[in-house]
Amino acid sequence: MIKGFAWNFGKKVAQRQNAISLFFTSSKKSYATEATFETKPFRLHRLETGPSNTVSVTRDDALALYEQMHAIRRMETAAGNMYKEKIIRGFCHLYSGQEACAVGIKSALRPQDSVITAYRAHGWTYVMGVSELGVLCELTGRQSGCARGKGGSMHMYAKNFYGGNGIVGAQVPLGVGIAFASKYSGTDGVCVALYGDGAANQGQVFEVYNMAKLWDVPCIFVCENNGYGMGTSVERASASTAYYTRGDYIPGIWVDGMDVLAVREATRFSVDYCASGKGPILLEMATYRYSGHSMSDPGTSYRTREEIQEVRQTRDPVTSFKEKIIAAELATAEEIKNLENKIRASVDEVVKKAKSDKEVGLEELVTDIYADNKESVIRGTTPWERYQHKTLGMAANV
Ligand SMILES: Cc1ncc(C[n+]2csc(CCOP(=O)(O)OP(=O)(O)O)c2C)c(N)n1
Ligand SMILES: [Mg+2]
Image (tube, rainbow, N blue to C red; front, side, top):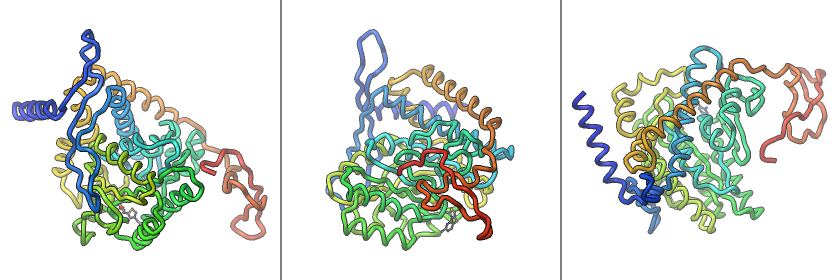
C-alpha cells in the first residue's frame, strides 16, 4: 500500500514538473485553460528538424481527447465481453492499449484527409465519425451497424475512412492509391496508411514506398508497433526493429504512441510536410496491445502477465493522460469521473441495443454489393441462379 502510494505520489510530482507551464482563466476559476508538456524525444530519420517536444493543449481539447480515448476503451471492453457471451461471433481484434494512436492522429487531420487501416479497426471507425451504436451493432451483426451488420469487425467504413482490411499489409498500397488520387485530383488531402509491425517486412510495402517517393505522393505511412504480430515478437520477426528508418529514402519519425499529445504533434508535422508537396513520410508509433491478437488468443503464451501489467501501470495511454490533465489542473478528478460515468452509461445503453436490435433480412444478401452495378443481377452459387441487385444504403467514399 505504502509503496504504491509513494510511487503514485512520485509520479504526480513528476507530471506536475512535466507540465512546464499553465495558463489560468479568471482568478475566480482555478482551472487552467491551457497547459504545456514535454513529450519523449522524437527520433528522426533523414530530417533536419522534427516536431516540437514541447506541446500545448487547451482544456477543451484535452477533455475531448480524453473522452475519445476512454470511449474506445469502454467500447472495446464491452466488445470483449459480448464476444465471451457469444453475442459477437467470428473475428474480433481489440484496440485497447493503442487508443492514443487513433485519437492523436485523427485530431491533427483536416476534413480533406483520409485514413485506411488493418483489421484492428473499431477505434478508428469511431474516431472517423461512426457512433458507438454503429460500431457495436456492426459487431453483433445487427441492422443499426454501420455496414448494416454485413461487414462485422474488420469491415467498417465512414467518410474518408477506407476501412477495416483483413489481409495483412494489403491496405498499404491502397492507402498510397488514395493519396495519389488526392494529388491527381488536386484536393490537397493526405492519406494516413496504417499497418502493424507484422506487415512491415512485406514486399508490397517496399514497392509502394518506392512509388510514393518517386511521385511525391502525400502519404503518411504509420507503423503501429505494438511489439507483436500475432504471437511473434518484433525481435523474432525483424532484422531491424527501427521501423521509422525502414523507408530508407523516406524521412521517418519515432513517436511515443502511448502519448496522445506526442502523436498529435507528430501528425501535425507530417500533414504539413506532405501537404507542402515534399512527398511521403513514415511514422513509427511505439504502442502496445493489452488483449491477445484476437479474441481466440489469450495473449499470455508468448509474453508474461508481468509485461502486460507493467505497461498498464507505467505507460497506459488513457490513465497517463488523465493524470496529466489533473496534475496540470486542466480539470478536476471529479470532472473526469463524471465524464467517465457518462461514457459508461452511454456504452451500456448501446450494448443493450446491440443485443436486441434486428438482423437484416435474407433478401439483403444481394443488396449494396456494388455502388454502381453495371448489370442489374447478381450471380448465385450456380450460373443459372440470378438475384436482383438493389441499392439500399449510401456507399461511403464514392
Ligand atoms: C496476407 C496475410 N497473411 C497472414 C494473415 C494472418 N494474420 C492476421 S494478423 C497477423 C499478424 C499481423 O501483425 P501486425 O501487423 O503486427 O498487426 P497487429 O495484429 O499487431 O495489430 C497475421 C499473420 C493475414 N490476415 N493476411
Ligand atoms: Mg503488431
